[in-house]
Image (cartoon, rainbow, N blue to C red; front, top):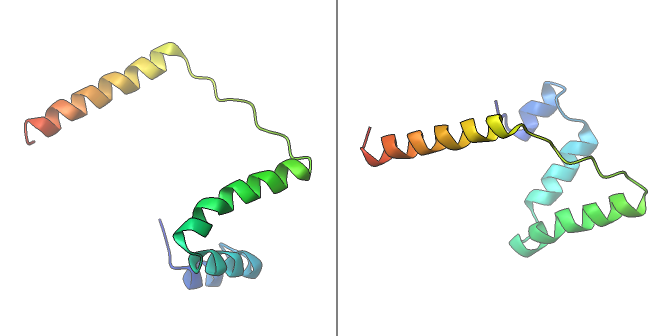
Length: 80
């Protein structure tokens, strides 16, 4: 469930510093917002952060996702 930032702070769901970061990010231009994740990734690498290992999925699991997606698309096309 998504709450407005002020309510999340009141509920203890985000620190004041986190709130300030979210508030500042909301004021960025679209171009600055696109650059922000790249900047943060570069900072994490510079700080020595480890890259998490890639996720591994079983073939059967991926096949079930694809089958469900195809079934959903068929239902959508039928107007259900």
